Image 1 (cartoon, one colour):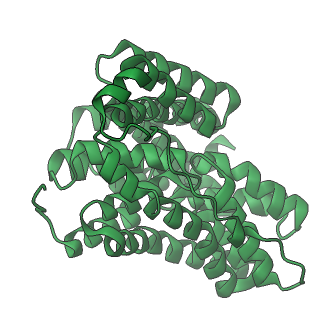
Image 2 (image 1 turned 60 degrees about the vertical axis):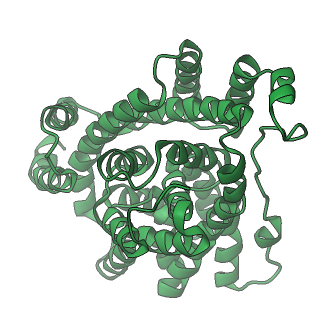
Length: 388
């Protein structure tokens, strides 16, 4: 067994910092984890990272949070997964609660449009660079993996969503081509084991509320959002809109857009917007219940299948399946860059901001993403009024 070269406390501090300074959404965050934990520090083996990325794509919930929880599980099991999950989520949760308080007290966040105008563009540059690095490291030169990657990216761009069936199909195709069932049957000791993901549904948590209690309604709705929405933060937004605005009428359309903007300009997972929404509906208790309800399913749906990935992930058939899923996941992440870019790059100044950010990251590996975000926010405060 590989010796552990880091402490649980060190891993906790890393994810606490990533949750505090990690801008850019799931694409950038997964890229940071690879860069820091696999490449630079060597804490996590690349194979374990790929397993975690594949599992995070196959199970419902926020991609970056699931990957973080899995990486915590790799060497420190349930305790590591739990502490990493808390460390990763709590900074952005506290930030959105503070913004929710300011939003309610001062009535709207007009300055946020100015900040997001520039920050959103710079974030596109950050996630584009992260997607490039992730692609070159995980796809390699395999033509079939590149084909899967390109198809997944195209589907994501066209549909503006991510489907678990796409990832399952990619894994099965690559498995059938590289490790046909007969070959797997002859070589593997686990002849009856099929390389399909173990995805556990927790429908019992997502029951409907028959009462009028607001906190219970918040809990049940956001548990459904966490348990049954696949993909990244991009995929959960339409589901949230249909429930928060149309079904329950908790927020109007403008308030909902403000909530999404809050999630985009704060670090950590994009779905932390649920904490902001919960605060607007029912104050701090609402924010806490919404956040817990959103992340509890992804936590359970990561640690329950994790032992199977750890134990069987190195079998040829399983490895082939995971490689196919990873290629599709990486393609979907790259496609999401284009989808998000269409919303953030709306004129020449935003295009220039995105391009400058990309060039800075490309030419200078020591440049700090938080510094880029801070400078972009300041630029936005001055530039936005002139453009609108």
